[in-house]
Length: 542
Image 1 (tube, rainbow, N blue to C red):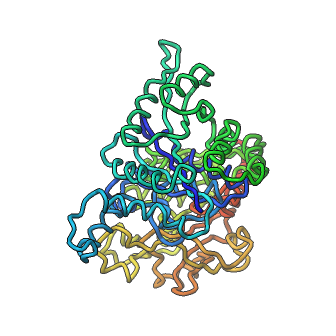
Image 2 (cartoon, one colour):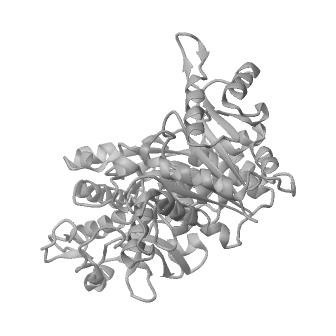
Image 3 (tube, rainbow, N blue to C red):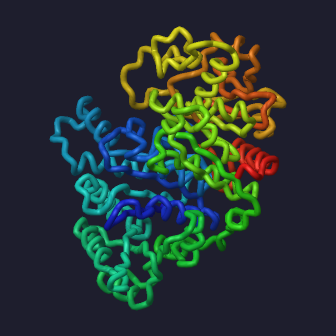
């Protein structure tokens, strides 16, 4: 029978439920157990696809085209296994399903209520992956904090599941905060006590307490928490702040979180955790012998989580190259001034990545950045909108197409080298209507990209509405643009390169979404290597 672990949070948001869930999953996986993680978010959006990156961070996309919470990125990066639409559910999707059933008459005229109809749908969704028979353990992260009104249906569903499945098959890990009061020079347990009390009021007794803290907790604090929270002292887990999230699995191993979960769920302990590859990654990460500085030109740099997967992909690629990658965010609107000032600003970087985004704001700044790196021979990597900006820049300044632009910026342009896909032109609704999920791509043998992948047939994830306009394909190719990758079914351009450039690659897809600790993305690995070569050639620039 599949076992279930629920991770809840209290006191404050952003404590790291996703990282704790991913770390626990990694430890259980390293013991030979089959594990997956799912996220249940309490907001009413059907999915995060229409949420502002400033408010919610990046929208993560799975192979099957689901627009999901960014925590699914952590799950994949830690476990090195893909997630799917079933791994992320929102209240909006729950209510949408319940209302559709009511409209069809599935409830036989009954009054539709939160209990049992909404909670039954939540329980059904929670157990979907478990019923597949593919997993020994399902870890479910419940978004929000205990006490939020919107979280109540999920906590009630959890209470019912614990009763239905039994405590040997369903446990709760509660993550809270123990703040340090500098004036009093002591750690305070009261917020955690109140958080557990709030959870108890919903009928749920936490089995394991994970406490975030800046300073180590002593035995007296553990005994106090055990007494007032009704949790065994051995089930109180310290979660100290660490320099990198990739330290957390080893910290949880030291605290015995995985062993405690296995004991609570009465799972035969199959073997000791095998974390050799993880430790090798950490060793390379922390003992890097090189350093490069990459400029990340984007539109949402005020919130680092808006480009979370890109930052993490650089960490993975840096470890492979034994190189510390310092990523400096650059707001694209900063680059829309005097060209000479822009060049002086960018010359200190070993490489420039132009990031994804939507809308016309900051586009000209991205195009100016592309022009600089193309002319100066600086390694360039463009992702989605970044690739589209590279096509526009090349069209204007090399191919001589005056007025070249994207129809996302000017829908009435006669020179839209980037244009809305035909199947997108009659779409009115925004949610879930882009080109989403994994699509095949055929690479040109011998191209930068094919050499990086080590193959000519790949599959990558997409999230966009606008594409390279094939009406300009031959004209741009004759001007020197290399079309290094295309979709085999549609002929849409997926990858562009410049042949006589140290490193100039633009991709229509999102390679950062498939980079993991154990499988760093080859394009990020090759881009970092190119930046290292550039630094060796011109060390005085830094």
